[in-house]
Image: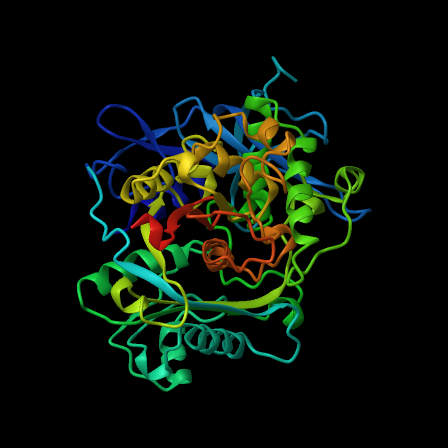
Length: 122
Length: 383
């Protein structure tokens, strides 16, 4: 037996981005043993589309030659929200409302979800 | 659902600050204990009178136990609520309920930190949660930057608006001898300050100081016989809406909307009754968000409201009359200092004393705009 967070991380390690949903189809993230607010459960798993919209962002400044990096909050189309980073953009190119798509970066020891701009707005 | 609260039946009987700014050579607990003893002395009470301790230290998860041991007393009740900088408002709420029920007789609420001279950085055991941490946000600064960016996007709030908050705070601080930052500050200084996590620059951030504070609360009938005029607690409410700001439904609306409305309903006061507001200004966006969420201006109108000079000396709503966390002091958790300035204004002993203050609002913030708690203080004329 293991909890939903462990299930989510095992899927991520295989390159899959999972979300949960409650009985009325609303997405739940981070993973939980029950639906927030109602306590219903267990929740169903489904594969996230990975598509979303930039809700807010910040560029964290570093002393040269280190480059600034962004922290972005992404609204997934399914309704859940998460913190991430949008890759492939420099300061000034990132804006609230831009469409982004997720990918799983497994290059580091811990896999993480990152985003890149979708072509229609890039 | 309305709140039951013993309106005015408990009062701040004593208060003190100690070591504001820099207190080299002192530990956090030494500063806390000094402030506690000074607050008791202010009330005309003895350490032996204290039977309940309320504390939240930056560096000690068992601070309630440490404080009891340090003071050498055996309290009947110890509350170590940790909702960040708003913890002390929650302490006031639970102390008022316990005092009114007769469960305790004398509550000492205290805080102290030596973060400036001990390390020069915010002293906190908290970090980003494991969902956010891989993306390396600055904790807690980037969370406030995300809220600021969203507020700018939705309402056209500008860096000049943010700077107006810092300039107002500095204007109050220049005439408060206890304030740590009293140098002249200009709009150009703010706009040219080093950017840290866009759109928050150094000028949008609170101070990193040492400092301690304490208040003593008793039932009001007892406080009337003590050394100083009682400052009755008219209402106190806390709201917990999230921990990580990523989980906020709307980053531009905080739980202050709930805590403020509930506290004001308990107190039976309207905005027109409130003579001064002491708002937890860890960052300049805080003041704007809380002015909106507490109902002093409409949502999205906070920027123009502060830019109009409304919260500065001579303005229609004096805010952070001690200089606030931006210019007076910020020893890591600031909530208790907002209540002390509110109580000083009601007593008539503030450095920047306003005339005829019978009701003061003190608002605390904890975590990343996560915990919001509001206390309404009055004079005995409001009972």
